[in-house]
Amino acid sequence: FLEGYSVWNLYNKKGILTRLLDKENLIYEQKKNKINNTTSLIETIPSFGSVIGQDSLMLFAVALIYFKVVIPGVILSVGNLSGILFSNLSKFIKNIVKVKGINRLVKDNCVLFEKIDESSKEIENYDIKIKNLSFSYGDKKVLNNINLEFKFGKKYIIIGPSGTGKTTLFNLLSKSIENYSGEIYLGDHNYKNLNAYTIHKSIGYVTQKTHIFNASLKDNITLFDNGYSELHYKKAIKNSQVDEFIIDDDQVIEKNGNNLSGGQNQRIAIAREIIHGHKIILFDESTNSLDKAKNLEMIKYLTSLDQTVIFIAHNASEEIINNFEYVIDFENGIKQKEK
Image (cartoon, rainbow, N blue to C red; front, side, top):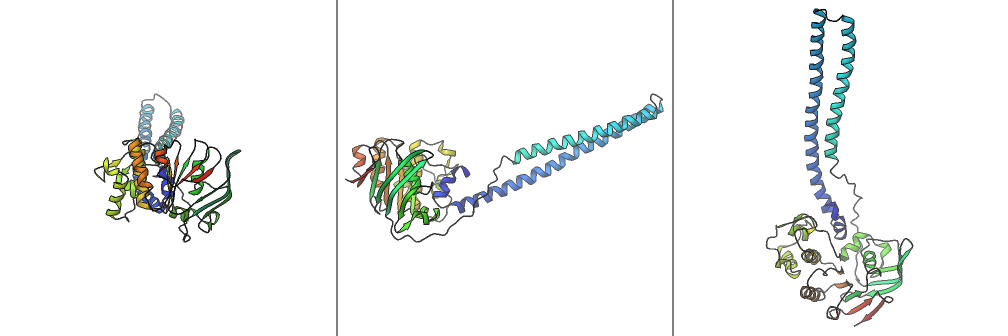
């Protein structure tokens, strides 16, 4: 579950993650107790062996004295040395048992979560305004004094080659990264005054390769949240075309979606976003693994939504671009134009 932490964070589901980890922790504690009990039992074996060994040696020494093979002084010295030997051997074996037990336990992750801040401000205006925004990775300037505006309900496509700052912009809008200069506003609220929980209530972010859990299809889409109606869920899998390749909602998806194609995983990610229904949705190359026909079909659906849709595409055909109301070109200086 922890490998998909970014998903729990973006969808404000860290509370559910904590519940799942509590369940895993209970199993962990049960296993730990079992190991401790087994360890205690095994530790008695070297102690018992030490007693038997020393008693046997004592009987053997008595026999040697009786038959006058050695004198009592020699036996006394040997007895002292053997006592030390058996004591150290017993400790050595006990430590081996403990180390093996601990090695099994540390395979489980011990995680300390920050306190989840679920306080949020009421957002009434979902327009986004970006003023003089700049961001750098170290000495490399990625965004330089950009100004953009996204009106609620409008559809935007951002085009341009890799490395021009498109994904960085999305990471800033989703509050996945900060430390920028300039201003970002959500309605009348400055981003710097909004916590991540508030942003994630309003803005959804579907990355190019989202995390898929080793869980059922339904749990992957709802993120283990039982609060969604069956009708809502069925609508999500239909509109995302997931129902075209999945028959059973309880079908288990392998870790990272290894038993599905890239396009199928992307459709699950889109279904996850549809069911959560954010006011603003960021799509970062989120359909690029679909074939040409399915890609266009999905774009047409996404641009028919009532929400604000902002879509990143590296290589978008005119047929794709024509579905959007605004084009933002990151290649030759960032230019925003209405189609």
